[in-house]
Length: 394
Image (cartoon, rainbow, N blue to C red; front, side, top):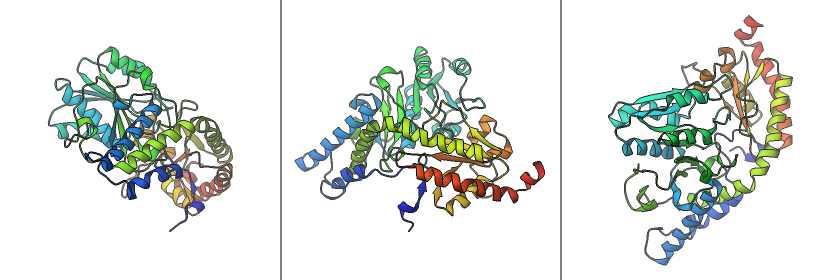
C-alpha cells in the first residue's frame, strides 16, 4: 500500500484524513467501553454520557442547542430525512425548491421524489449565474403557498461557491416555508451560528471535517415539525432509530471541537495556500480558467478548467506523482457528459471536460503547493499536444 507520507493530498472536499486527536478519543469506544448506550447498567450509561458530550460539541460549532442535534449515518441520510420529513409534515404541499448545482444526495432525491413518495410533486431547480452564484429575485419569485421545503446547499462541493443561506432562510420563514441546507462542505470552514438564522434543518458529515466516515448530523430547529426517516427504537429521542455508532459519534464531537479551534487557520493560512496555488496555475498555464466566484468561496477550494484536455487524463498523470485531486467532470465509462454544476454555470465544452478541483486542508504545506505548481504545467502541455481539440482550435 502507498504510504500517506508520499501523497500530496488536495482532495479534501471528497474526504479528509481523520485527525490524530479524533482517532485517539475513538479508540476506547472500539475496545474498552463497548456497552450499549441504551442499556440500564452503568457500563452502558457512561457510553451514553460520551454521546451527550459529543452532541454538545457539535452544537457548539453550529451555534445550536444540544437538543437540536440528531446523529445520523451520513450527510445523505440527513438530507433525505429533512426533505421527507417536510413532505410528510405538510402532505398538502407538493412543491420543492432546490438548485441545479446540488450534491447528488439532494439532486437525485428530488429527481426521483414522485417514485419514492407515490405522489406527484413540483420541483423548482434554481439556475445559477456564470460565476456559480444565485439570483435572489428568481428565488423569491419561486416561493409559493404550496412550497413544502427549500433545500439549498451552503457551499458548492465542486466550486466552493457560497450561497446567501441566512437571507434565503429568512425569506422562506417569512412565507412559513421550511428551509434546509446541506452544509456538508461549509461546516468547519466558515463560521455558522444557527441561533441567529432561520434555518430549520442543516446537514453535515463527519468525514468532511477530519472526523470518521459513517457518521453525520441533522440539525432540527426546536419546534420544527419532524417525522423520522428511520423508525425503530427510542434512540435520538425517537428521531432516528438504530443503535448509535458510538465511536464515530465521539470522534465527530472531537472533530467539531478541533474545527472551531482551527477556523482562523482555515480562513487565513489555508486560504493563502489556495490562492498561491490558484494564481500560480492560472499564470503559468495558458487557457486555464477559474470556475466560480472569485471571493464568495470556501477558503480551501479552487476549481480550474484546463481547456482542450480531459480531466480524467489530467488526474491520471497527476497520480503518477502521487498528487490527489478531483475532476470536475462527472464522466463515467461510455459517457462524455461533464459535471452538472459546470453545465449549469455555462462553462464551455472545451473547458468543462478539463476541470480539476483542488481542495486543501490544514494539513497541506507550502512545499506541497510548490510541488504541484512544478508538475502541472508539463502535464497540461503534454496532454494538449495529444488533443485534437487543441490542434484544431489553437
